[in-house]
Length: 561
Ligand SMILES: [Zn+2]
Image 1 (cartoon, rainbow, N blue to C red):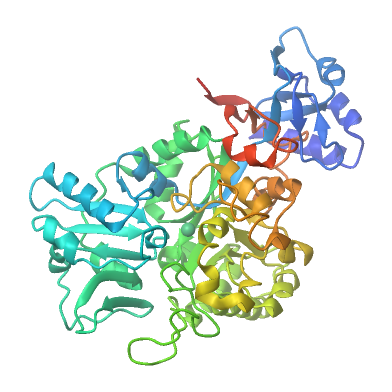
Image 2 (cartoon, rainbow, N blue to C red; image 1 turned 120 degrees about the vertical axis):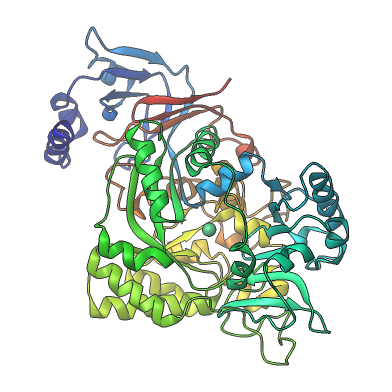
């Protein structure tokens, strides 16, 4: 602690001066990595060859001669052999335990070719399980199946008479239950959906097995507890993250119990990843009352996560005007998606967060949900002004063009997932039409309006590999290079913008840009060594980038075999 403070004083005092002077004042490096092709993302010294580290922090960045000149007899020297080095990548929106559960064998239908394929895999699993055991899975996407129709339970129920089944759509905003699961949950002809949810029914009024947004809870509260402990899930996900170059993650929605698990893992030294966690809205008000913000080197909790709407994939995103491909619901009313939190709740939590020093991160995908969220933030801020609030909106997938400048105006950070764009681009125009699509995944418009974008993947919804995200951000193409030239290429990011979004700007969205996100003296020594220079290689090669080594706080936490 003391050493930290002393270092901060040194850093603060030297900040305004030239780096060379800082080099002279800072302690000698315990370790030096030299002979690297280093992209620092430090605007004053964007490129470097060597980096010196002491006690987990960077003490020197510069040419080989400059940094090696600081070596003491005890300094360990490592040769990077010309490899490319980037600041450690940060995923600004993801679900850590969710990734761990797929890593540990939860059924993953991400590559299923059809609903029949899904049914076949579930039937196979059922054969190996005792009667009555639940079968749980996820990541199916009917948009990539022939016919692209939402599934219903009948064929699935026919092959799983003895096992309750619950499988969630890729975005997590809809799930399919079989007959046995609906029976276990007591779903009948008369069951009604809670606010912000839908029980999808056929023409005869029978439940099809699909439960959207808040209605998912009708089934999920009957699920057995996860077989693996939360710590096991987190550690599995950590291993997966470190191997793809993530040194930090923003875990988008955890419980107070999860905070305890993270703290224990941090205290025992098992948590290597730096986690910035958001408390789920249903716990937020009580949590704020009982706890001040927790700010640590491995786990920080100073924000909360609320949902304003669902997703575009399952037509739960809340729109200003009806869906182009579902203009009316079964009763003939205009269909605009789902508001899943009452606007009063959004306002109440925003005011509470402002008064207690917390940040708000609200999931808003549709243009109406984004507008309502901005309105609530603006009203809360007018009542409790706080200069550096850094309130965020998560996803920001569809914006009315008029709302774009309001992010800058109110200091709101868009937290966006480039691979969501390239997963959705094939059907987005059907959902919302050409005119509204101009405000879809509007990265360049937002950046030009003067706000940073914090980038992430929303894993396990998308791959946790951040190089897929960087590639999607700079191309707006899928990994096959489609469509030619990119989907709405005017919204692409430059490589530097994309790298910033996954480093410095993600750090900024967590109040951590002075600690993380670039390689500069005083910051954490979090960096990765990769097998190609993603700033200059053929853009099509970016997704194939291999991480050779991941270093957090000066400690090598992953090495490629
Ligand atoms: Zn999410």
